[in-house]
Amino acid sequence: MAAGSASTLAARLREEARRLGFDPVGIASVPGGERMALRSAALARWLQRGHQADMAWMADPRRRAVETLLPGVRSLLAVGLSYHVGAQRTPGSLKVARYGWGRDYHRVIDGRLRRLGRWLERQVDTVGWRACVDSAPLMDKAWAEEAGVGWIGKHGNLIHRRRGSWLLLGHLLTTLELPADAPARPLCGSCSRCIPACPTGAISEPFVVDSRRCLAFHTIENRDDALPQPIARQLQGWVAGCDLCQEACPWNQQALPASDDPDLQPRPWWLNLRAEEALGWSDAEWDERLRASALRRIRPWMWRRNILAVLEGGAEVDP
Image (cartoon, rainbow, N blue to C red; front, top):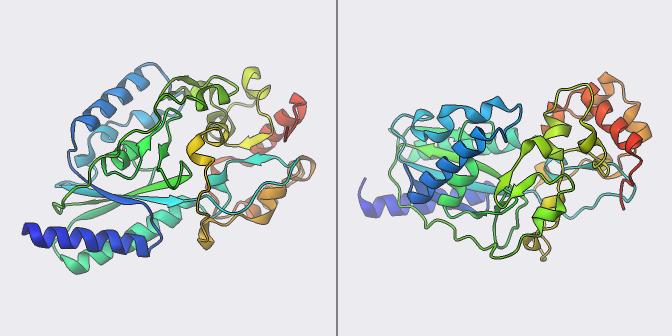
């Protein structure tokens, strides 16, 4: 493809991605620059230290070899979908991570990326492509950083200067060689407010999150009958994920644009979730309420385990 036509196609691809609701968007070349090699080495160290806890899928070798996900891949489009909405939890309610308030983002992003891939096929019928959300073995935050979508903060989340870190990520891998955007420049500086904001010390050092200490890991991924006492004592009302490190980030405390995307709007009961009522849900009622939710990864018995741990801990749900 000629350089001029590649630039035109890249601009149209970004425009089409924005039309589908993605913002920010950016393009990276494969295999990426020096920073990608550093991110790959950092992942290897993170795994070696056991920070992945029981998440064995994080060690999938394809995660550090993007070409195994799409043979012949030359470029990728990284997209962000803001889940910052104009709604707040009712004081005294149980706490659920914001990303779980709306529809299952895996389905939302995957569906839109597939539409984008089919659009790309209509432009270049020989193109190969693959849509990826965070369930795919891809260093999604590192590639988003490489594509200029945002930088990885000290809490391990991607941050955009106008959107903060309330971003869901997706990637469209393609065999086309497209002109790349400049990688994002880190802007955390000397700020480290996210580190002491974690009550269990999960951010063991800047940019390193130890899942074994993370409230989000234990409330969503831990399959043990009981939560570890050091975790249970610090839940502070969180029963599905945790947003504490993000809430402490100054980039999230600015006036952020609120998404009006219908797929991301909260189900009203998430904002007024009362322990006694939620604890009494039958498995069938749980199944109905969490239909098409990313939080279905939490099984009904885990749901009750988490709520009981909050109640038994005696901590205020909303200080």
